[in-house]
Length: 133
Image: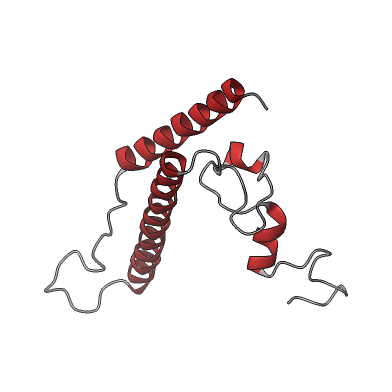
């Protein structure tokens, strides 16, 4: 690959990373509503309490995912600055990450190494119709 083409690809990834970062920051944290609106209220609607708790869990999870994504994006931007020749290569095996990088420009592993790290079986986990593991 020519140096000019490589530079163009790296700039495209840098632009995409900065856009993703700006989008996440612009959206802000999901607010977590308190379980009780009125601190003096005792009891209350049990269905509403369960719904509030579920909403708190969902909001908390979204905030954790956002924080993790921001960290991965910032890490990718650092890698792009510090070692541009290595950007786009799998941090485990050194092979090109490929098209996966176009979708998620912050990934560090190729598909095979990611599957090995996740422990994903290649052929699927079910052997029988009633196997729900």
